[in-house]
Image: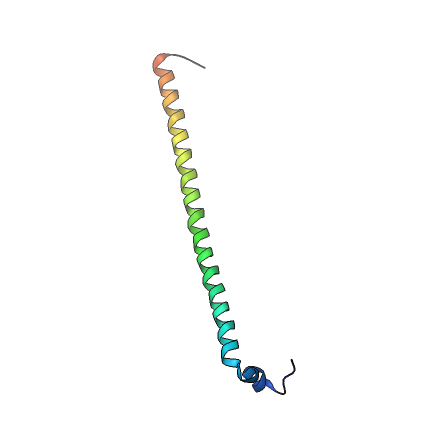
Length: 77
């Protein structure tokens, strides 16, 4: 499609309002989707790191408990 000037480009043959509103709605939808994905990813990564730290604490406590039990019973592995 060939336009005479920039004004006729934005007018789009009388349908400019609909064309540019649809482009704007699509761009806004994509922006909202991107922002939501960004924050969801950040929240998920925080939860994963928290769970990994929790698992490490559980493992350390179990090892410490096993070591303390071995000392009290006199067993050496």
